[in-house]
Amino acid sequence: MKSFDVPLQFRSALMSAIKNKRKQADKLKKDVSPTSLAIGSLSISLARHFGFCYGVENAIEIAFKAVDENPTKRIYLLSEMIHNPGVNADLLQSGVQFIMDTKGKQLIPWDQIQAADIVIIPAFGTTVEIEQLLKEKGIEPTRYETTCPFVEKVWNRAEKIGQDGYTIIVHGKPQHEETRATFSHSKEHAPTLVINDMSEAITLSAFINGEKDLSLFFETFKGQYNEGFDPHKDLQRIGVVNQTTMLASDTQAIAEYLKQIMIAHYQLNESTIANHFADTRDTLCYATNDNQSAVQAMLETPADMAIIIGGYNSSNTSHLVELCETKIPTYYIKDELCLLDNLQIVHFNFHTKEQLQSAFDTSAKHILISAGASCPDTVVERVIARICLLHQEEVAFEALKASWI
Image (cartoon, rainbow, N blue to C red; front, side, top):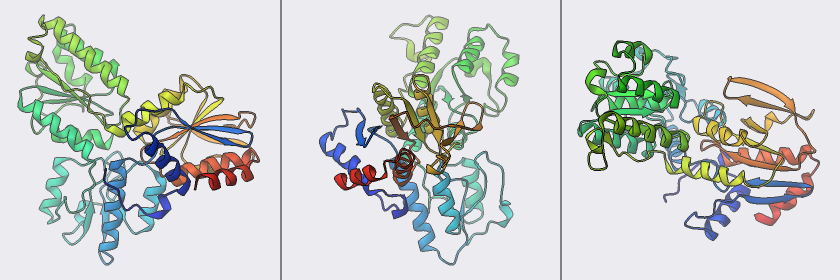
Protein backbone atom coordinates (compact mmCIF):
# COMPACT_ATOMS: atom_id res chain seq x y z
CA MET A 1 0.00 0.00 0.00
CA LYS A 2 1.18 3.51 -0.84
CA SER A 3 2.98 5.44 1.90
CA PHE A 4 2.25 9.13 2.43
CA ASP A 5 4.24 12.19 3.41
CA VAL A 6 2.43 13.06 6.64
CA PRO A 7 3.83 15.94 8.76
CA LEU A 8 6.04 14.87 11.66
CA GLN A 9 3.72 16.39 14.26
CA PHE A 10 1.28 13.56 13.60
CA ARG A 11 3.87 10.76 13.76
CA SER A 12 4.96 8.72 16.79
CA ALA A 13 8.14 6.64 16.78
CA LEU A 14 6.67 4.36 19.44
CA MET A 15 3.34 3.77 17.67
CA SER A 16 5.13 3.27 14.34
CA ALA A 17 7.43 0.68 15.90
CA ILE A 18 4.49 -1.20 17.39
CA LYS A 19 2.53 -1.14 14.14
CA ASN A 20 5.55 -2.17 12.05
CA LYS A 21 6.38 -5.10 14.33
CA ARG A 22 2.81 -6.36 14.18
CA LYS A 23 2.74 -5.91 10.40
CA GLN A 24 5.98 -7.84 9.88
CA ALA A 25 4.74 -10.70 12.06
CA ASP A 26 1.29 -10.78 10.46
CA LYS A 27 1.36 -9.38 6.93
CA LEU A 28 -2.06 -10.82 6.06
CA LYS A 29 -3.63 -9.17 9.14
CA LYS A 30 -5.16 -12.41 10.39
CA ASP A 31 -4.17 -11.82 14.00
CA VAL A 32 -6.39 -9.07 15.43
CA SER A 33 -5.44 -9.63 19.06
CA PRO A 34 -4.24 -6.50 20.87
CA THR A 35 -0.63 -5.57 21.60
CA SER A 36 0.12 -6.01 25.30
CA LEU A 37 2.21 -3.27 26.90
CA ALA A 38 3.50 -3.92 30.43
CA ILE A 39 4.35 -0.56 32.02
CA GLY A 40 5.28 -1.02 35.66
CA SER A 41 2.07 -1.82 37.52
CA LEU A 42 0.03 -0.98 34.42
CA SER A 43 -1.11 -3.36 31.71
CA ILE A 44 -2.30 -1.68 28.52
CA SER A 45 -3.88 -3.59 25.66
CA LEU A 46 -3.54 -1.57 22.46
CA ALA A 47 -5.86 -2.49 19.60
CA ARG A 48 -4.20 -4.25 16.65
CA HIS A 49 -5.51 -1.59 14.25
CA PHE A 50 -6.05 2.06 15.17
CA GLY A 51 -5.37 5.59 14.03
CA PHE A 52 -4.80 7.12 10.60
CA CYS A 53 -6.16 5.14 7.66
CA TYR A 54 -5.20 5.33 3.97
CA GLY A 55 -7.84 7.94 3.17
CA VAL A 56 -6.87 10.20 6.07
CA GLU A 57 -3.13 10.08 5.31
CA ASN A 58 -3.90 10.78 1.65
CA ALA A 59 -6.03 13.78 2.62
CA ILE A 60 -3.42 15.20 5.01
CA GLU A 61 -0.65 14.88 2.43
CA ILE A 62 -2.69 16.67 -0.25
CA ALA A 63 -3.88 19.44 2.09
CA PHE A 64 -0.43 20.34 3.37
CA LYS A 65 0.94 20.06 -0.18
CA ALA A 66 -1.64 22.66 -1.23
CA VAL A 67 -0.41 24.95 1.55
CA ASP A 68 3.24 24.50 0.59
CA GLU A 69 2.63 25.00 -3.13
CA ASN A 70 0.54 28.16 -2.79
CA PRO A 71 2.21 30.48 -0.26
CA THR A 72 0.70 33.66 -1.75
CA LYS A 73 -2.85 32.41 -2.34
CA ARG A 74 -5.93 32.15 -0.18
CA ILE A 75 -6.55 28.50 0.65
CA TYR A 76 -9.91 27.12 1.68
CA LEU A 77 -11.29 23.77 2.80
CA LEU A 78 -14.96 23.14 2.06
CA SER A 79 -15.32 21.94 5.67
CA GLU A 80 -13.26 20.02 8.22
CA MET A 81 -10.93 17.80 6.22
CA ILE A 82 -11.28 14.99 8.76
CA HIS A 83 -13.00 14.79 12.13
CA ASN A 84 -10.02 15.45 14.35
CA PRO A 85 -9.69 18.76 16.20
CA GLY A 86 -5.89 18.69 16.35
CA VAL A 87 -5.40 18.15 12.62
CA ASN A 88 -7.97 20.80 11.74
CA ALA A 89 -6.35 23.23 14.18
CA ASP A 90 -2.98 22.71 12.47
CA LEU A 91 -4.55 23.47 9.10
CA LEU A 92 -6.15 26.65 10.46
CA GLN A 93 -2.79 27.68 11.89
CA SER A 94 -1.30 27.14 8.42
CA GLY A 95 -3.71 29.74 7.06
CA VAL A 96 -6.40 27.44 5.68
CA GLN A 97 -9.99 28.69 6.14
CA PHE A 98 -13.15 26.56 6.30
CA ILE A 99 -15.99 27.57 3.96
CA MET A 100 -18.62 25.53 5.86
CA ASP A 101 -18.95 23.76 9.18
CA THR A 102 -19.50 20.01 9.45
CA LYS A 103 -23.28 20.38 9.09
CA GLY A 104 -23.06 22.44 5.92
CA LYS A 105 -23.63 25.86 7.51
CA GLN A 106 -21.93 28.56 5.46
CA LEU A 107 -19.03 30.26 7.27
CA ILE A 108 -17.60 32.17 4.30
CA PRO A 109 -20.03 33.44 1.60
CA TRP A 110 -19.54 31.92 -1.83
CA ASP A 111 -19.27 35.37 -3.39
CA GLN A 112 -15.97 35.85 -1.52
CA ILE A 113 -14.43 32.82 -3.24
CA GLN A 114 -12.56 33.78 -6.42
CA ALA A 115 -11.04 31.88 -9.35
CA ALA A 116 -7.50 32.49 -8.07
CA ASP A 117 -8.26 30.85 -4.72
CA ILE A 118 -7.40 27.28 -3.80
CA VAL A 119 -10.29 25.12 -2.59
CA ILE A 120 -9.57 21.69 -1.08
CA ILE A 121 -12.22 18.96 -1.19
CA PRO A 122 -12.27 17.13 2.19
CA ALA A 123 -11.82 13.39 2.68
CA PHE A 124 -15.61 12.93 2.94
CA GLY A 125 -16.04 14.20 -0.63
CA THR A 126 -18.57 16.82 -1.63
CA THR A 127 -21.82 17.18 -3.50
CA VAL A 128 -22.28 17.37 -7.25
CA GLU A 129 -23.85 20.78 -6.75
CA ILE A 130 -20.79 22.22 -4.99
CA GLU A 131 -18.46 20.71 -7.58
CA GLN A 132 -20.46 22.50 -10.28
CA LEU A 133 -20.46 25.76 -8.32
CA LEU A 134 -16.65 25.67 -8.03
CA LYS A 135 -16.29 25.00 -11.75
CA GLU A 136 -18.53 27.97 -12.53
CA LYS A 137 -16.17 30.11 -10.43
CA GLY A 138 -13.23 28.91 -12.47
CA ILE A 139 -11.90 26.60 -9.75
CA GLU A 140 -11.05 23.01 -10.72
CA PRO A 141 -12.33 20.90 -7.79
CA THR A 142 -10.08 17.94 -8.56
CA ARG A 143 -6.82 19.92 -8.30
CA TYR A 144 -6.59 19.38 -4.53
CA GLU A 145 -9.29 16.81 -3.96
CA THR A 146 -8.77 14.59 -0.93
CA THR A 147 -11.92 12.45 -1.30
CA CYS A 148 -11.23 9.03 0.18
CA PRO A 149 -11.04 6.37 -2.57
CA PHE A 150 -13.27 4.12 -0.47
CA VAL A 151 -15.97 6.79 -0.47
CA GLU A 152 -15.64 7.00 -4.24
CA LYS A 153 -16.02 3.22 -4.33
CA VAL A 154 -19.44 3.61 -2.70
CA TRP A 155 -20.40 6.23 -5.29
CA ASN A 156 -19.38 3.85 -8.08
CA ARG A 157 -21.37 1.02 -6.52
CA ALA A 158 -24.44 3.24 -6.21
CA GLU A 159 -24.06 4.36 -9.83
CA LYS A 160 -23.88 0.75 -11.03
CA ILE A 161 -26.97 -0.49 -9.22
CA GLY A 162 -28.80 2.72 -10.14
CA GLN A 163 -28.08 2.07 -13.81
CA ASP A 164 -29.48 -1.43 -13.28
CA GLY A 165 -32.80 0.08 -12.28
CA TYR A 166 -32.66 -0.05 -8.49
CA THR A 167 -33.44 2.67 -5.98
CA ILE A 168 -30.47 3.37 -3.70
CA ILE A 169 -30.96 3.07 0.05
CA VAL A 170 -28.04 4.77 1.82
CA HIS A 171 -27.42 3.63 5.41
CA GLY A 172 -25.81 6.67 6.99
CA LYS A 173 -26.20 9.66 9.27
CA PRO A 174 -28.28 12.10 7.19
CA GLN A 175 -26.36 15.22 8.30
CA HIS A 176 -22.87 13.71 7.98
CA GLU A 177 -20.71 15.25 5.22
CA GLU A 178 -19.99 11.88 3.64
CA THR A 179 -23.64 10.88 3.56
CA ARG A 180 -24.63 14.22 2.03
CA ALA A 181 -21.98 13.72 -0.67
CA THR A 182 -23.00 10.11 -1.34
CA PHE A 183 -26.66 11.10 -1.53
CA SER A 184 -25.85 13.86 -4.03
CA HIS A 185 -23.82 11.58 -6.30
CA SER A 186 -26.30 8.70 -6.02
CA LYS A 187 -29.37 10.74 -6.96
CA GLU A 188 -27.67 11.62 -10.24
CA HIS A 189 -28.21 8.01 -11.29
CA ALA A 190 -31.21 6.72 -9.36
CA PRO A 191 -33.91 7.56 -6.82
CA THR A 192 -32.13 7.73 -3.45
CA LEU A 193 -33.24 7.53 0.18
CA VAL A 194 -31.09 7.88 3.32
CA ILE A 195 -31.97 5.83 6.41
CA ASN A 196 -30.20 6.33 9.71
CA ASP A 197 -30.72 3.03 11.51
CA MET A 198 -32.71 -0.19 11.87
CA SER A 199 -35.68 1.73 13.27
CA GLU A 200 -35.95 3.67 10.02
CA ALA A 201 -35.46 0.46 8.02
CA ILE A 202 -38.44 -1.05 9.87
CA THR A 203 -40.49 2.09 9.14
CA LEU A 204 -39.46 1.85 5.48
CA SER A 205 -40.59 -1.80 5.37
CA ALA A 206 -44.07 -0.73 6.51
CA PHE A 207 -44.32 1.46 3.40
CA ILE A 208 -43.01 -1.34 1.18
CA ASN A 209 -45.52 -3.79 2.63
CA GLY A 210 -48.44 -1.39 2.37
CA GLU A 211 -48.86 -1.31 6.14
CA LYS A 212 -48.42 2.47 6.06
CA ASP A 213 -50.17 4.85 3.69
CA LEU A 214 -47.62 6.00 1.10
CA SER A 215 -48.91 9.56 1.46
CA LEU A 216 -47.17 9.62 4.86
CA PHE A 217 -43.78 8.71 3.34
CA PHE A 218 -42.74 12.27 2.52
CA GLU A 219 -43.18 13.63 6.02
CA THR A 220 -41.70 10.52 7.64
CA PHE A 221 -38.46 10.76 5.64
CA LYS A 222 -38.44 14.52 5.13
CA GLY A 223 -35.08 15.76 3.85
CA GLN A 224 -33.80 12.22 3.23
CA TYR A 225 -34.98 11.57 -0.36
CA ASN A 226 -34.31 13.17 -3.72
CA GLU A 227 -36.66 15.55 -5.46
CA GLY A 228 -39.18 13.60 -7.51
CA PHE A 229 -38.94 10.44 -5.37
CA ASP A 230 -42.06 8.37 -5.99
CA PRO A 231 -42.61 5.75 -3.27
CA HIS A 232 -45.32 4.07 -5.37
CA LYS A 233 -42.72 2.86 -7.88
CA ASP A 234 -39.32 3.64 -6.34
CA LEU A 235 -39.64 1.12 -3.50
CA GLN A 236 -40.19 -1.86 -5.80
CA ARG A 237 -36.49 -2.46 -6.56
CA ILE A 238 -33.87 -1.46 -3.99
CA GLY A 239 -30.18 -1.87 -3.14
CA VAL A 240 -28.29 -0.85 0.01
CA VAL A 241 -24.99 1.04 0.24
CA ASN A 242 -23.62 2.84 3.29
CA GLN A 243 -21.60 5.62 4.79
CA THR A 244 -18.18 3.97 5.01
CA THR A 245 -17.78 4.55 8.74
CA MET A 246 -20.99 2.97 10.04
CA LEU A 247 -21.03 -0.02 12.37
CA ALA A 248 -20.55 -3.09 10.16
CA SER A 249 -23.05 -5.23 12.02
CA ASP A 250 -25.72 -2.51 11.71
CA THR A 251 -25.35 -2.19 7.95
CA GLN A 252 -25.34 -5.95 7.48
CA ALA A 253 -28.43 -6.32 9.64
CA ILE A 254 -30.30 -3.55 7.76
CA ALA A 255 -29.41 -4.96 4.34
CA GLU A 256 -30.44 -8.48 5.35
CA TYR A 257 -33.66 -7.22 6.94
CA LEU A 258 -34.70 -5.28 3.83
CA LYS A 259 -33.77 -8.23 1.65
CA GLN A 260 -36.08 -10.50 3.66
CA ILE A 261 -38.85 -7.88 3.46
CA MET A 262 -38.58 -7.85 -0.34
CA ILE A 263 -38.48 -11.67 -0.49
CA ALA A 264 -41.63 -11.98 1.62
CA HIS A 265 -43.51 -9.13 -0.07
CA TYR A 266 -42.80 -10.24 -3.64
CA GLN A 267 -42.64 -13.99 -2.87
CA LEU A 268 -39.13 -14.29 -4.23
CA ASN A 269 -36.76 -17.24 -4.34
CA GLU A 270 -33.00 -17.47 -4.94
CA SER A 271 -33.45 -17.17 -8.70
CA THR A 272 -35.75 -14.14 -8.56
CA ILE A 273 -34.29 -12.08 -5.67
CA ALA A 274 -32.44 -9.85 -8.14
CA ASN A 275 -35.77 -8.73 -9.60
CA HIS A 276 -36.34 -6.62 -6.48
CA PHE A 277 -33.15 -6.54 -4.38
CA ALA A 278 -29.61 -5.76 -5.52
CA ASP A 279 -26.74 -7.73 -4.00
CA THR A 280 -24.49 -4.78 -3.16
CA ARG A 281 -22.45 -6.49 -0.41
CA ASP A 282 -20.87 -4.37 2.29
CA THR A 283 -19.45 -0.99 1.30
CA LEU A 284 -17.60 -0.21 4.53
CA CYS A 285 -13.96 0.75 4.02
CA TYR A 286 -11.14 -1.61 5.03
CA ALA A 287 -10.05 0.60 7.95
CA THR A 288 -13.53 0.67 9.46
CA ASN A 289 -13.67 -3.11 9.27
CA ASP A 290 -10.13 -3.53 10.63
CA ASN A 291 -10.62 -1.12 13.52
CA GLN A 292 -13.96 -2.61 14.53
CA SER A 293 -12.61 -6.17 14.33
CA ALA A 294 -9.58 -5.17 16.39
CA VAL A 295 -11.76 -3.61 19.10
CA GLN A 296 -13.96 -6.71 19.23
CA ALA A 297 -10.85 -8.86 19.69
CA MET A 298 -9.46 -6.44 22.28
CA LEU A 299 -12.66 -6.79 24.30
CA GLU A 300 -11.89 -10.48 24.80
CA THR A 301 -9.04 -9.41 27.09
CA PRO A 302 -10.12 -8.95 30.75
CA ALA A 303 -9.74 -5.27 31.68
CA ASP A 304 -10.95 -2.56 34.04
CA MET A 305 -11.79 0.14 31.50
CA ALA A 306 -11.51 1.14 27.85
CA ILE A 307 -10.35 4.48 26.48
CA ILE A 308 -11.22 5.38 22.89
CA ILE A 309 -9.51 8.43 21.39
CA GLY A 310 -10.82 10.61 18.59
CA GLY A 311 -12.77 13.69 17.53
CA TYR A 312 -16.21 13.95 19.08
CA ASN A 313 -17.87 14.35 15.68
CA SER A 314 -16.07 11.30 14.26
CA SER A 315 -18.54 8.65 13.15
CA ASN A 316 -16.05 5.78 13.00
CA THR A 317 -14.70 6.62 16.47
CA SER A 318 -18.17 6.71 18.01
CA HIS A 319 -18.82 3.20 16.73
CA LEU A 320 -15.67 1.92 18.45
CA VAL A 321 -17.04 3.44 21.66
CA GLU A 322 -20.38 1.78 20.97
CA LEU A 323 -18.73 -1.63 20.73
CA CYS A 324 -16.84 -1.15 23.99
CA GLU A 325 -19.46 0.41 26.21
CA THR A 326 -21.75 -2.62 26.12
CA LYS A 327 -19.05 -4.71 27.82
CA ILE A 328 -16.81 -2.45 29.91
CA PRO A 329 -16.68 1.08 31.40
CA THR A 330 -15.62 3.20 28.43
CA TYR A 331 -14.31 6.76 28.13
CA TYR A 332 -14.41 8.63 24.82
CA ILE A 333 -11.72 11.34 24.88
CA LYS A 334 -10.23 13.63 22.25
CA ASP A 335 -6.67 13.83 23.59
CA GLU A 336 -4.38 13.63 26.63
CA LEU A 337 -5.66 16.95 27.98
CA CYS A 338 -8.85 15.14 28.97
CA LEU A 339 -6.87 13.39 31.72
CA LEU A 340 -6.65 15.99 34.49
CA ASP A 341 -4.09 16.43 37.27
CA ASN A 342 -6.81 16.07 39.92
CA LEU A 343 -7.50 12.48 38.73
CA GLN A 344 -10.59 13.44 36.78
CA ILE A 345 -11.28 12.43 33.19
CA VAL A 346 -13.23 14.64 30.78
CA HIS A 347 -15.11 12.43 28.32
CA PHE A 348 -17.89 12.58 25.76
CA ASN A 349 -21.27 10.87 25.71
CA PHE A 350 -21.96 10.61 21.98
CA HIS A 351 -25.55 9.51 22.59
CA THR A 352 -26.52 12.73 24.39
CA LYS A 353 -23.75 14.90 22.88
CA GLU A 354 -22.69 15.91 26.39
CA GLN A 355 -19.19 16.39 27.74
CA LEU A 356 -18.89 14.80 31.18
CA GLN A 357 -16.30 14.70 33.96
CA SER A 358 -15.73 11.62 36.08
CA ALA A 359 -13.20 10.30 38.57
CA PHE A 360 -10.23 8.60 36.92
CA ASP A 361 -9.75 5.41 38.92
CA THR A 362 -6.02 4.76 39.32
CA SER A 363 -6.82 1.38 40.89
CA ALA A 364 -7.86 0.33 37.38
CA LYS A 365 -4.58 -1.19 36.22
CA HIS A 366 -5.61 -2.94 33.01
CA ILE A 367 -6.76 -0.54 30.30
CA LEU A 368 -7.89 -1.15 26.72
CA ILE A 369 -7.00 1.57 24.21
CA SER A 370 -7.95 2.27 20.61
CA ALA A 371 -8.40 5.34 18.40
CA GLY A 372 -10.46 6.40 15.42
CA ALA A 373 -9.21 6.53 11.84
CA SER A 374 -8.62 10.29 12.01
CA CYS A 375 -6.63 10.26 15.26
CA PRO A 376 -2.86 10.93 14.93
CA ASP A 377 -0.47 8.39 16.44
CA THR A 378 1.15 11.19 18.45
CA VAL A 379 -2.11 11.71 20.32
CA VAL A 380 -2.32 8.00 21.17
CA GLU A 381 1.22 8.06 22.54
CA ARG A 382 0.54 11.20 24.57
CA VAL A 383 -2.59 9.63 26.08
CA ILE A 384 -0.62 6.56 27.15
CA ALA A 385 2.14 8.79 28.57
CA ARG A 386 -0.46 10.78 30.50
CA ILE A 387 -2.05 7.63 31.93
CA CYS A 388 1.40 6.51 33.06
CA LEU A 389 2.03 9.90 34.68
CA LEU A 390 -1.23 9.69 36.65
CA HIS A 391 -0.24 6.18 37.78
CA GLN A 392 3.26 7.44 38.65
CA GLU A 393 4.81 5.12 36.07
CA GLU A 394 6.71 7.71 34.00
CA VAL A 395 10.04 5.87 34.37
CA ALA A 396 8.47 2.60 33.29
CA PHE A 397 6.97 4.34 30.24
CA GLU A 398 10.35 5.69 29.16
CA ALA A 399 11.79 2.19 29.56
CA LEU A 400 8.98 0.81 27.38
CA LYS A 401 9.74 3.37 24.67
CA ALA A 402 13.43 2.51 24.76
CA SER A 403 12.62 -1.18 24.35
CA TRP A 404 10.55 -0.58 21.21
CA ILE A 405 12.35 2.23 19.41
